[in-house]
Amino acid sequence: PLKAVIFDLDGVIADTAVVHDLAWRQLASELGVPFDNATGERMKGVDRLGSLDILLERADRRYAEHERLALAERKNGYYREQIERFGPEQLLPGARDAIAATRAAGLKVGLASASRNASLLLERMGIADLFDHVVDAGRIARSKPDPEIFLAAARGLGVEPHECLGVEDAAAGVDSILAAGMAAVAVGDSPALAHADARIPNVAAFDIKHYTT
Ligand code: B16
Ligand code: MG
Image (cartoon, rainbow, N blue to C red; front, side, top):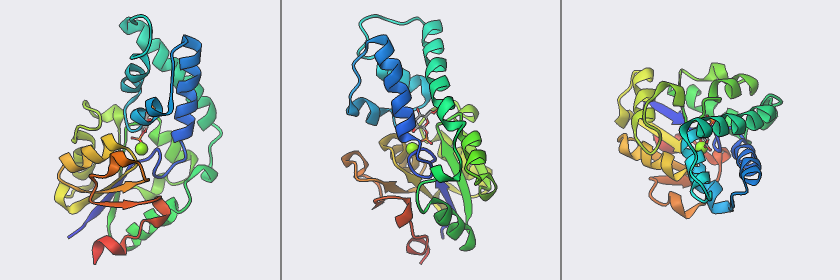
């Protein structure tokens, strides 16, 4: 039986995908590196340095480690400037209800986010109290699509992976959930999400009854 639901943050609960995208675009334009929609799509669910590597694939020179760290830090500054102003308005429609309904059904609720800004976002949006356990990129060694982050979330919740359902908007995230031995619900209509067990257009369409009966 299902005992827990583990949500992704960016693109599922919080309206941050476009904020990340704009911050990366700003950095790309400063570096004179081309950036298109496909580049942005590939970065979803990928951690900060991994995303920078995707951006730099089209750079005309190599960047040393210390330069890469400084560029990642610069992008994070642009991102932080925006999320400092975040409040409950930036919750995606239906997100709070989906989490509350999951709790009301007697299930545990976890968060598995590649973002090191995850805790700050939960606080700003006023939903930190709704999670039984939060795992972000700062607590794990291997990023999505590796299963580590979802496995760590299950462990923190005190449940087995096969008792969990993961909810993700990114292909790397769905891969991570499935590799962890969990059922995956994909949010969005990207063809890259076709391998999930179920698909919903957005988190407002998440109905916990659908998975518990
Ligand atoms: P930060 P998620 C991911 O969060 C985003 O989807 C991804 O685009 C971003 O690069 C990553 O967090 C790292 O974020 O720079 O804040 O540490 O979707 O796993 O919640
Ligand atoms: Mg996401």
